[in-house]
Amino acid sequence: MTTDHGYPAPRLYIDGAWCEGETGRTTEVVNPATGQVIGHVPLATTADLDRAAAAAAAGFVTWRGTPIAQRTAILHRAADLLVSRADEVGRIMTLEQGKPLAEAANEARRVAGALRWDADDARRAYGRVIPSEDGTLLSVRRHPIGPVAAFTPWNFPAGSPMRKIAAALSAGCSIIVKASEETPGTACELVRCFEDAGLPAGVLNLVFGEPAEVSAHLIAHPATRLVAFTGSVPVGKLLASAAGAAMKPSVMELGGHAPVIVCADADPVTAARRAAAAKFANAGQVCTSPSRFLVHESLVGAFTEEFVRAAEAVVVGDGLDEGVTMGPLANERRLTAIEGLVADAVARGAKVLTGGSRLDRPGYYYPPTVLTDVPDDAALMTDEPFGPIAPIVPFADLDEALRIANALPYGLAAYGFTRSTATAERLTREFEAGILSINHCGGSVHEAPSGGVKSSGYGREGGPEGLDAYLVTKRVSHLLTD
Image 1 (cartoon, rainbow, N blue to C red):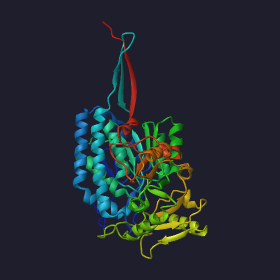
Image 2 (image 1 turned 30 degrees about the horizontal axis):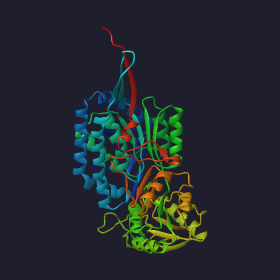
Image 3 (image 1 turned 180 degrees about the horizontal axis):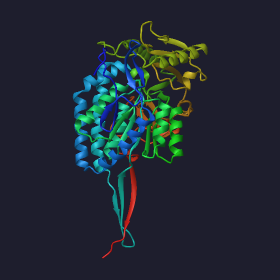
Image 4 (image 1 turned 30 degrees about the vertical axis):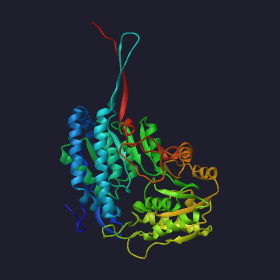
């Protein structure tokens, strides 16, 4: 079923069945490119959540007992289906989130690869046998932790849910995903791939609802064994506190304010091009987006000139239109926040080199914006911008740059540009971040872990480390008898 806008009608998915929810409560889904309502998403009640938790508990027993080869085959079929449907999933994603169609379809294909990697890596989640001194058979076993409650944001409507779904299902867990009410259509399409691949009922459940109500109920529910969250630092702290109060482990992938250090020996033009491409991807609505550009004073002129050129070459528009390279911001809240950050910086003496005001057209459009002379006390330098704003700040020596880079309570991603291996190693040692890229601004990869330090969270997603939270380690000491 689709709306007049060609947008599928979102539903809850509980115990292998699509449903509207107990009370029929809904909220609007808005196309950020036009500001128009394109659909309505049902909001779960506590009764719906209880049904989902019960389904996940039963689904866990089924899935845990399914041979791993059979589990892996189902997950690979789901990945194949997602790849075959990537263009349509991308179109839905663009309608509800705004990113360009090619970028959205590629996101769907990329997360199918993540699912495949996790499914195969789970087959290597070995235990071990330990020689003992007293004749017992001593071993370490790895078992799935149990039903997972996962909470995901709107900026990567396929990527964020899939990273949790892939890890949970690969490890042998069941999962309830509370996806964003702003981007429900993509989440529904992901679930359909698993449904059509033959995933047993109850193993994967999808709900939407009032965020505080859903999180409080699912985290406290006796069936939930692990909490996984991607989102803002303030919300993450609340959810981590609730999980801790219930003695439930959690994975927290939270926000950041990623510094970029362009050292004196770097190529400023190459650095500017690569940094700008990363900055304006997904309109800057990426938790690892480079957001503070610290450039050696000898290079700042050339870097800034090329960065402005790259910003002005970005084609802003409806993500469904050909040639568009950056879509609108995802919602009115982001637009208001970006306007506030720029206004605050300008009031404190910053100069706007390009952009700097919302576009005069329907939808939530804000152009790539480059600022200089931004003082340290501007909110832009301390608050995660989550939008297409780039403050460029000169520095005199690397000690100063690292001090500025590490001064904030965040520690998710960081970037450095240098020709020196020794300097690259120093950046690796001294950047306070869980993710570091040198001479590029790389994103997440399936085979390696991503996650933060300090207020940017704990736990990892991706790589073998990404499965750790979804498995429990059990020591078994077996006294052999006649």
